[in-house]
Image 1 (tube, one colour):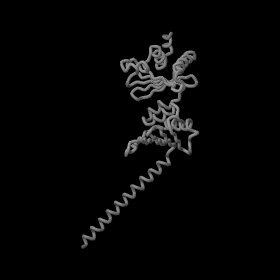
Image 2 (cartoon, helix red, strand yellow):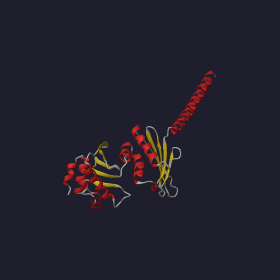
Image 3 (tube, rainbow, N blue to C red):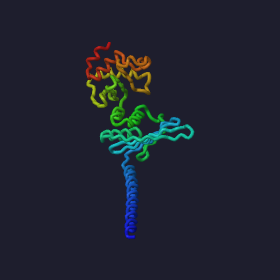
Image 4 (cartoon, rainbow, N blue to C red):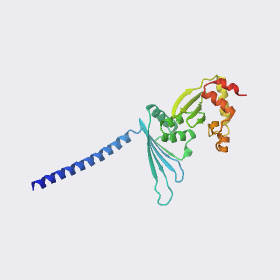
Length: 256
């Protein structure tokens, strides 16, 4: 009889501890969510306007960016699917992201929230920055750099150059080798800086709403003929690009 009473006490105690643990976990998770919500700097809700379309809920914190991507589905009995991504960001990158939101969406900000319905509400630069968040900090750094015109030159599978022509006539280069970014400015004479800016402006002129030139090295020459004709680098362009990425304006002497 005594043993049965002791067993009951043990079982009741264990049940109590289990219930207490469950309540504690639920409370802890709830408080974590509440604290997480309090630490949001900015939140962007971006629906691309497609049919059925995709919605991105982007939350910016002091050290990370959380993105919930919900893909709509228009089939019968089809449920939307959500994928969750968390990307770690340095303080420097978070500061750039905050500046981007404040500069580009000041009229859309409601408290700390921005709602964007449809890609038509965004220009090319804004779209590239928002989409780049999914790829992480390096991808963001490449896309958040402001520019008047830009050249994206792909040397090979491991080496890319992003060349930014600025409003003040200066040129900035980001060299990406095996996902490591090196940034430097081009130091040319005023005459050659004007020469380069005039060239890129002439190339962009047919498509003013798309101020980016994509160019691929000779390595890609054997790819699809249409692709090469559209994006392959010409000899003249190679002189210009090499002068910029090597920071050597004497290469421009090869041009007629």
